[in-house]
Image 1 (cartoon, rainbow over the protein chains, first blue to last red):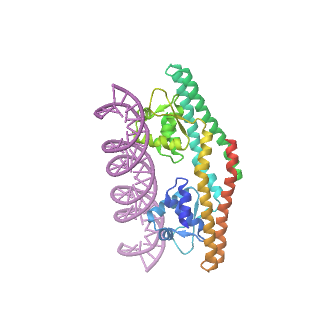
Image 2: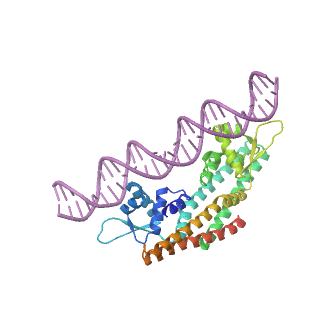
Image 3: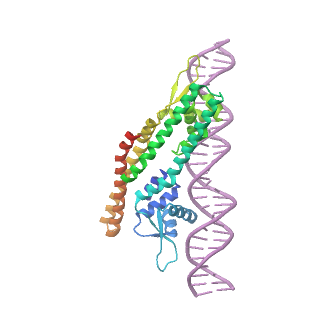
Length: 152
Length: 152
DNA sequence: TATCTCGTTCAATTCAAATTGAACGTTCTA
DNA sequence: TAGAACGTTCAATTTGAATTGAACGAGATA
């Protein structure tokens, strides 16, 4: 059952054990301690520790207090749409932005090459055409994002 | 310049060299041979060969014939939207489908557990609730896909 | 204070995927 | 027919990331 969740999370390039833990917590009726996870998933405590902190930093899980027990307990954030939003703003968004500036720099370098006669005019045209295409696609994508956000 | 494209492609979990090659071809004004790529990217011929076949199978690049030369030349598919479509139907779509059947199986197992008294009614309710949430999200996502396809 | 029980950290290991070199088959060329 | 120029394949290596064991530090307990 949990392996299903693990695979789900490998889709988004997260460490396997991290996925396992989120899956486990998502399906678990009660909060679990590190030791619980270690036992149920047969992973080391070190993995469990790093994975929980990763997930917590992504706000995918929360730490909860269980009275009379000084261990840390965790429960999953059940709203996956919210997680997607976080993933977008904190992960995809920045990459898109850096990609944009990179494209601009490349475009600049290209113009430079033309000015110095390092490339033919035809080549320059084709190249900058293609760079522009990517930029356009990126912008469309950015425009689509808030729409998707509402929709999901 | 090309390293930019390489990074771009690491985003979608493709081998680095594959990304490099697509980037190179995308920006190259003329078709390139395997040896060209080997020289320009400093990679082995083996890598170039496997990468080009990968890309060709994804229809991301095309083989073209240059008269008077018996080497294979390649050029990039310039329409990236089309590539996205291919990526979706051939990569994401199938995963979503298998994910769906997995969810159904899990849901079945859960009902079974309830029937045999292996879990409490409250637990069952919470679990199947959550499974249903994922299903719903998946459906929304599937519904969104064709919309995005038109848009990009 | 001495001893547990936790969670964290970090160097070492393991593991999987990417990359490579070398051998090979095929097709052209002399 | 011998040899060169290709592209492909496959076992071996490299590389980078995930995982682990062991040492550690901070609180609790006695």
